[in-house]
Length: 160
Image 1 (cartoon, one colour):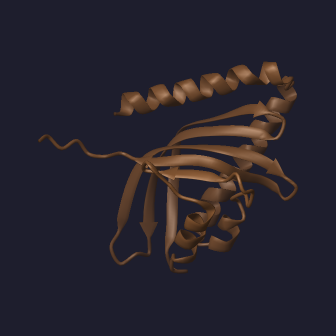
Image 2 (cartoon, helix red, strand yellow):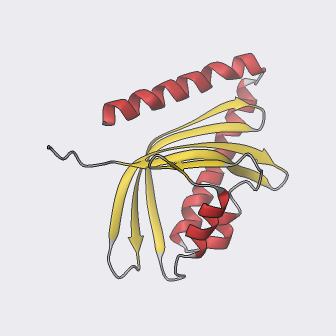
């Protein structure tokens, strides 16, 4: 399973890395996209850890083309809003990223791929999980926003 996820990420990142030269991105523009998307990704993690759900929600695009897939199921922007608004203010979500790749695709578009480990802190029953995530970030008038992406949690192997 992990090998399949790595293969998918490599294909995604390799494809995204091939595109900048075709889209006319300069090396300095690509570096600027990597830096600014990285800052937005850090904001995402910081807002979650501080239980700032309204601020976190602002990082998602309100564009009608928004798409998110979670563990194989499509979750629209309404689903994201409902999930975030349902979180108690005392719950913090701490996430660490591993093997993060930020690939500039075109002016104002960056693709992020990574593994993650998430831990809910302040919950009556501690919850931990991890998996893989990819995101397409787009630069909008209010800054970088998540336009689409996916997250999938590792499923333990269960012999039949």
